[in-house]
Length: 230
Image (cartoon, rainbow, N blue to C red; front, side, top):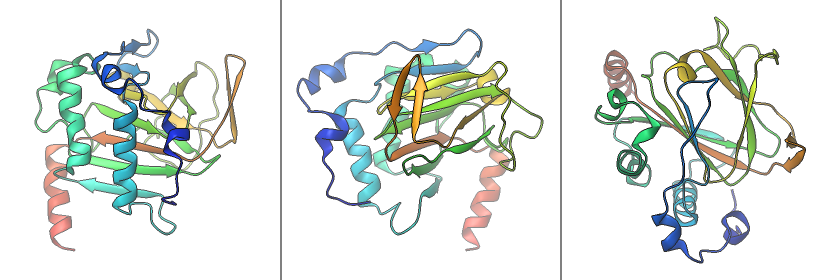
C-alpha cells in the first residue's frame, strides 16, 4: 500500500475533531438478530487515521500480503479499543463479556482490494463470545444469514437469500457480534465492485477491517505452545 495517500479524501477534514470525539453515537440494534450491534461513524477522523497509519507503518500488508494475525497482548495502537468499548460503549456486550480480562487477545487484520469479499461464515468456536469488527477506508455491505451446520468452514458460499439482512458498513463503523448474532448467524461480504442498498449505489475501494476476538482458555495454552515451538 502506498504511503502517498490523500488522507482527507479517505477521512474528510479534521474540523471540529475534538467536539466529534465527545459525542457518543447511538448503538443500533436489530430485532431479528439478537446480539448484533452497530455504531455508525463510531471512530473519529483522528482514530481512523491513527489505526490506518499504524497498519501501514508496521508493514502488515507489505508485498502481496492481505491478512495478518496477532495473538496475545495486542499492540498499543489496537489495545486502546478495549478501554474505548468499556468506558464509552459498554452497551455493545453483556456484562459477562465486559468483565473478562483482557476483553480481546486476538486480532485479525484484513485488506480487501476493490471488489473483493469474504465467504459467508461463523467465526471458529475456539473463540469466545463477543467479536468486534472495525471498518476502515471504504464502504461495503456485510450480509447476515442464518447459519448452516458447517458455517465455520469457508469451503462453500451461502447463496440462500431467504431471511438475509444486509448491513451497510462505512469507514469508522464498528460492528459487534454476540449471542445469536455470533453463533446462529453467518456474516460475509459478496465479491463485487458496487454495492446497492435502499436504491443507492456505493462503489467500493480498498477496505481494511480489524476483527477483535478472545481465544478460549484451552486454545490460549495451545497457541502459546505452538508459538514457542516456532
